[in-house]
Image (cartoon, rainbow, N blue to C red):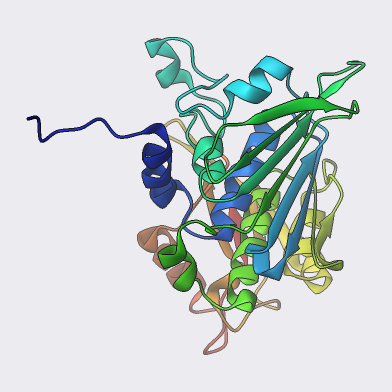
Length: 288
């Protein structure tokens, strides 16, 4: 008798969810990135109970057909890759086709979408990775995805979630990072009706987006930087030593619009500022 068995799709997705979905902020990040890949100009994030109770992401992107709305729930189904060569020219935020099925496997998942100018939309619901229910829905612009009761069917994961305030802070930070990387897109976030972050598209002056993230007092102290060497381009904004923070919360570094936290890079920035800042203060730096 064979001792090796093929895992069910439900179990595979739950295992994948452990890698993709660490906490509510992971869901916020993955779904907002999908909105960006869909060409959204505005992304809205609504949270309840720190994101554990409910996460709703809505956008004005290009939406999906009924076929794609169903297919996106299958693992490794993606609109961003077709051939092996595409791996070397990725210009989207996601491409593996794992996030949505993983999220749907550990939550009560609802998707409402429609293609542009469609006379009818599509609503897809999934509970804990079960079979999807597909039904007609009113037409809409873009897509809205609602995640309820995250980890309701994985009690061990839910047990070790942090307090709601901690999870909420991580969700807010996920929105801020994406907003700083995409100033041309409007981002709005709220928790149980209370505004967390609000910033329309800042195409004309990226400083407006930084000020929305770090406070309006930072705006007049921000100045642009740009450096080109060996095929690498670094752009961004630095705050003058007159505007500092008591912690490193104002240090943001991105590579190809993806947030990174590299200790060596952060240390280099801090050393460059150390002779100009009061003791215990940190610089404000946003670099791409």
